[in-house]
Amino acid sequence: MLHQTLPLPACLMLLLVACAPAAPAPAPAAPGGPSKPAAETPKRGGTLVLGATTDPGQLNPGITTAGGTHLVADNLYNGLLQFDERLEPQPDLAESWQVAPDGRTYTFNLRSNVLWHDGTPFTSADVKFTFEEVLLKFHARTKAGLEHVLAGIDTPDPQTVVFRFKEPYAPLLRRLDVVEAPMLPKHVYEGTDVQQNPANLAPIGTGPYQFAEYVKGDRVRMVRNERYFKAGLPYLDEVVFRVIPQESSLELALEQGEVDYAWSLPGPDIARLQQSPDIRLVQAPSGPGGAYCEDTLIFNLAHAPLDKLEVRRAFAHAVNRQQLLDQVRFGQGRVASGPIASTMAWAYNPEVPKYEYSVQKANQLLDQAGLARGAGGTRYGLTFVFPPAYQRTAEVVRQNMAEVGVDVQLKGLEVNAANEQIFVKKDFDLGIGSYCGGPDPEVGVTRAYVSTNIGPILYSNGAGYRNPRVDELFAEAATTVDQGQRTKLYAEVQDILVKDLPYLWLLENETYRAYRAEVHGLRYWAGDLVETAYRDR
Image (cartoon, rainbow, N blue to C red):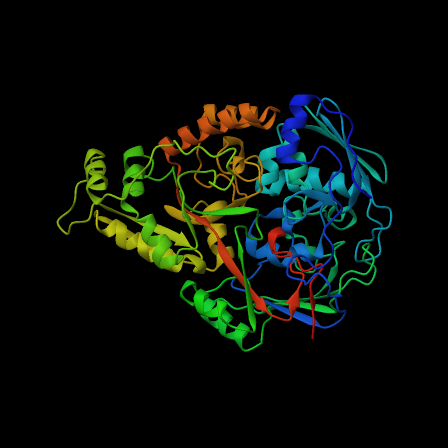
């Protein structure tokens, strides 16, 4: 059943065309996605093995935006909506919806045939609980975007959910897929510590696959949900996610047929793999954590001397981002210029200040900050905390900063331990993360900069940055319906942030996924979901 909308004011209609469909959208894409030949019938049965370089850590995607968790766990859950290959919202747990003329009320009609994996019916009470007790407390992007604009959630009956907003809020439909708002079972989590609930390691969802096994550091196994609410899906009997930390080892496993899909590949081998008759590659601007991702250095603004603007600007001139693109990413992506990726063209500000690579300027700024070189040529030292995926990036940063007299001590940790030390314990000088988000700045950008999102939440405002004007601009942009005006607001936000430099934006990610030629139907544009995946032999 297609969604429906009530008539909208012209200004709100214009924004929803860009940020969420205001008229009936096309039916969901046919199962199989773009990798399936048009005339081929999906085959049922078999096992799909997917290789990931990071362990998920836990399997509750509602309490984190970490890509390693979402890559695996999103296949156990659903959102109210899902995205097609054009990133347009389509029905999922909600079969239809209406937007009030003033843009302040959204009514969702839920499917009536959905069961949690333990057989309990899914209802509107689960939606209300998920938002109020989980997402608005622990999901960095949803919390930052909704906590100050959402007036309330009503559940007039088990199949109806009503979101009420204080002001018109056009981006909502972009916030309701399984990445931004995975629905969780109220009967499992109510009255418990959500972050420590045993279900985080043995999850109960509504998704196409049910949890079977989790061996940390090795694999997650899930099996077909025989009572899935989408007729005929999923096709596979079993899905296994293998944890293979080294990209080179993952690539070898793919070529030898030990895994069917690789989330990450060594850059130097892309050209060779493209020539293989057994391997298919697809370029994906997104990761499981969102529609775009930017590798970002995080300055701990509570630690001297990073609290000085001159020191952060020295970093911006000293770190050779083109070197990172060429030697670490092997040309996959672009040098970043600020907090909004250039691929989000309507909101991107190309006129922000630029920090070209210049050892001379970096040295001058450090001198101005009063950080003189000691007898050994070192000005000061700091600790750089990072997960394994950023080992090469960290080494380049260390080399670059040594040229200007900064001693960067590298502290590589397992990904979940690194996130804990950076975002929860705040025990770092310099950190790094891939900040991902959706096709609207409100879905992903806001959470890293507003002062209300400073706290022990993964991928939140890790720098501890506070600027009242930035808070005001993000709030105004979220409740403004005219896209032209929103563009202006986000342009000012970017100008302020690039001048303040609470973070250093390194690269806009654009990576390749690789899979065996017999695999079809992977939804790589929507977090690499395997709901419609199958093998042809």
